Length: 356
Image 1: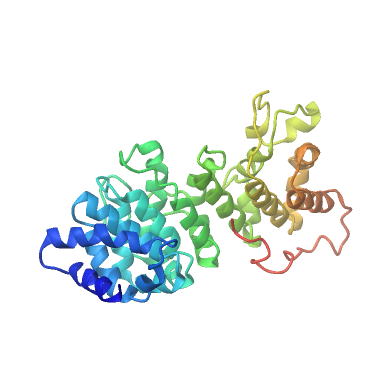
Image 2 (image 1 turned 90 degrees about the vertical axis):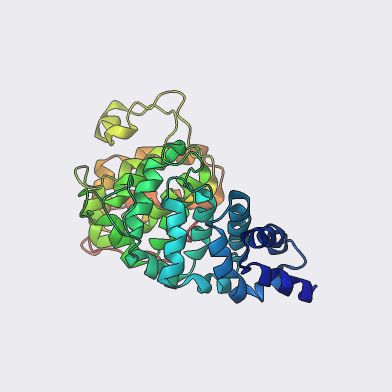
């Protein structure tokens, strides 16, 4: 089998396109994690990655097989390191952003695997990929990926792609300070903060999209010095999009409701809460992070977040979510002293609240 696999790998670099494409369609079966030959293929990753990236630009069937193989192989972080250069990442990003790409969604899955590596996040954050007409007036990868994520919703940019897995990429990138700063800084081409473009998907039907967005918002909340901006209705205004998935059909006292963000008022009898407990936990973690500054606590009190948490707690069935809700309530309802008015540190470090 090793000899047969080595011969198959050689065919991936054949000068004949039909041979390359046939080899790509065969090799995908070896790459699945459940395959008995998966580890055998992984041991030859250095010989496979670049030829497969080339085949991704060829005939549709072979391109899909090649990209699927790369997705399967990059479940192994050591294989991800083989993409830690600008040329390889540029090829992946272009396969996502070209509007005629038939493998854009699979390429998004590949990139979401790759960004589990810190080194790749760092390269991606500064990567110049050249202009792509129809997306935005920027040459940088993160600008293009953010805008295609928004414009590509419901296959409006590319008839073959939804770009939902880019939300996981954004969540990975914002695990790092440079990624959080990117999402909180206004871009030069449209003067908008990238986080304001994606946070509106916190209630989107697809769980991959809204889950990645929830994790990105949570990660943004680690930037304590930006809490004023994050909570300012005239700036980022992120609080409503954290609260909306936690809201149900409850009616609140008029005095409380009038002080809540406008977006969460009068939601109606058919309003549904986030159904996934891991995503509810992520949103509650974001609220706890906002409570780590005195300004954040005061703002959440003024915006009557406590009644929303109280209503959510009454129907909560998940123990982790219940604990996170209780912790936030303690911070919001506790008396402030000179000591507590000093900004609190999040419990531990950024890894305490694991990304979903």
